[in-house]
Image (cartoon, rainbow, N blue to C red):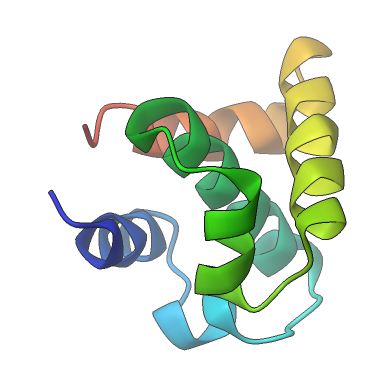
Length: 92
């Protein structure tokens, strides 16, 4: 599956638009889904932080921070994060 197809599927499953994921939208839900998208693409497609930054128009440090943040939410069983992550983890 191509990266853009995965991004489309994640957006669809989480009820946000691809445009919102690629934009600078900062609502909690969109930011959370975007961060889950970074994590998912990194873990399952093996994309580097730099590659993710290029796709989403973000700096490498922004991607690193976001992945660490969403991992922390998952580790502490944050209800919303775990629910959204569970929706997308089987895409691959």
